[in-house]
Image 1: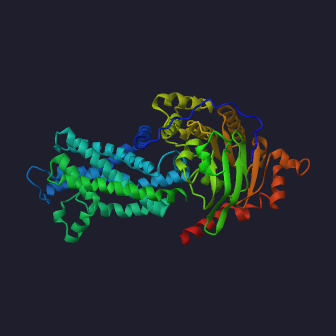
Image 2 (image 1 turned 90 degrees about the horizontal axis):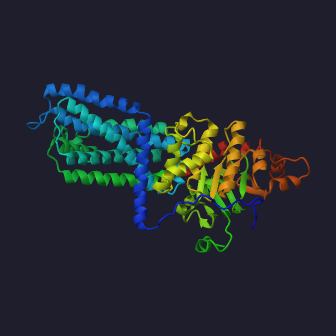
Image 3 (image 1 turned 90 degrees about the vertical axis):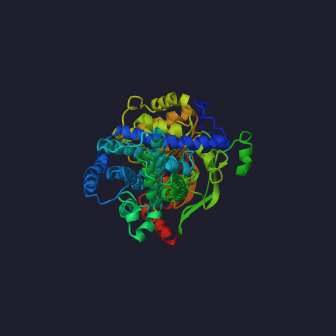
Length: 281
Length: 281
């Protein structure tokens, strides 16, 4: 069917961007998308810092009250030279990242309800890049949280390793952990679809994840059945890696890292596959 | 003409901006879009009209690559939406029905986000973001959080977002729904100006017949998933004699009034059908 519009408009005055089409360009675009979504997260934090402060309260309580009390109780036997507070700090760091990440799916459901997600999905951004971007944006938030915990713990007298490379490694592990749990949350969002249901599930799984990890006590003091669960809990690996890097705790770092990278890739894949299900409701 | 032939020789033939061939989609047993055939010429301002639940939004969702057609094809400038979603997304700008700008970002940041997502080179980004905001009369409000904008301003911000990639086809889903009459007229003026300035094809859905009459070159009346009639608004009205409105035209072709139609084709019906579909998996 041919039809000429009555008043044919003039030639385009703005050119669309030139897009290279090869694997290298594709990969750099993917990386660019992740950077973009992290940038958005940073801008939002900049506009509203209140969340940073309120989120600092819980780790502060854990360190100040729980940490101090348990240090006095001497209930947990640690190797020479490691205080309970030093042992606890990486656990609290991972915990506060977990608390941010596990409710990340709510944000994506909210974005779906508001039409933001639809609009993002109509841009030339692969689903996996969208999820990876969101996951690492959550990592950015967690990183800030991690810095808060390090500062608090240092004020309370915890001596961290002085090696900047170890801090860099810990930052990477923390981001991976946040990305994993954010994708877990977004996957659940893709399954349950409704915000309040996700809220309930998030609350139901956070504490079991926390208590079955080595955040508060070594796995060796756990009952046998819990030790088994702990072995399947990525949070344990995250915490062990953070301890190894930050306070020189003996751990098999390569195993922790492999588990974290593997878990993150698996959860990104899972959340990406479930994203269309969420978007099309 | 098949889609693949069109991709090989996009310049040689005058390709329709949008071409739907037997486009069909169902939610469970409810056929939301039923063998729709539609051709939109480049440069046209085209209106897809009908009551809520007529299948307009579902048609748009197939066109914007959000869902894949159950049957038939939809091509944008000769590119098949189901086969090459990424390429289709490069040529369309999409403004969804809901006001979907991110309230926690400023106007500038909202537009910059889309500049990044459409791979606008870093060097050009700032200038193009400023240009897009200026085109929509938002230069002064650019530094404010979008959360402080009025409904009409958010719509214009969304138009600025969709402009940034210099799309060849602008898809507007109910662009003026929920706006007060003054904001509505204002948004329409901007859409008209955009189209003239950037040589864009515009496809919009609306259930405001008077607006379609005033601003569209051609319209299709859609009812219960089917297109009942297509033509220039004046032509359609003239066919029924003097003093008729598009509402009368609609009634004539569907044997239904707009007010009655939602009873059966309404959003509640679609929701119900979706729930059924969900239950049935």
